[in-house]
Length: 149
Image 1 (cartoon, rainbow, N blue to C red):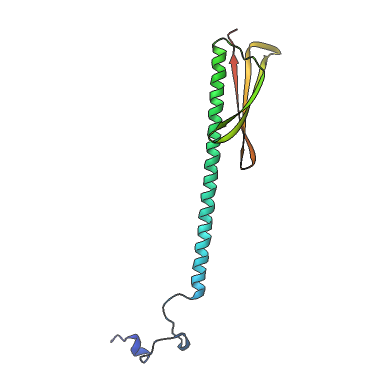
Image 2 (spheres, helix red, strand yellow; image 1 turned 135 degrees about the vertical axis):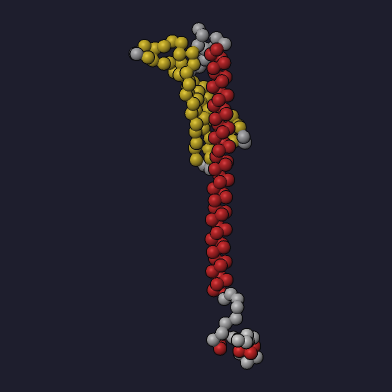
């Protein structure tokens, strides 16, 4: 069996769409469909990228807030251990950490057990607040202080 070339089959003419034969390649519809699919994929990738970037920023702010809570708790425990009793039942303030403005509040309250107030034990609650994308966020820490007095 002899292999014939395309030109021999068509009589020396190039095939065209009018004669029922098609040339290899893409049609305009196929190219537009491929570009549309590519654009949808790029949009999905960008959306997930910005979502991850936002979560990273929130995590940084939350870690800064937790670091502040730990430092404040250590400061209050050190004051209780050295014999000083916290002078105020409530205090508050503002502090900038990691490029973000945080506000905090400390509340000390007495502990009751069996209907009786325990004079040497205080419950301390520290709350820290900040704004993330216009939404108020907060973290809280509750612990107990025993005074030496």
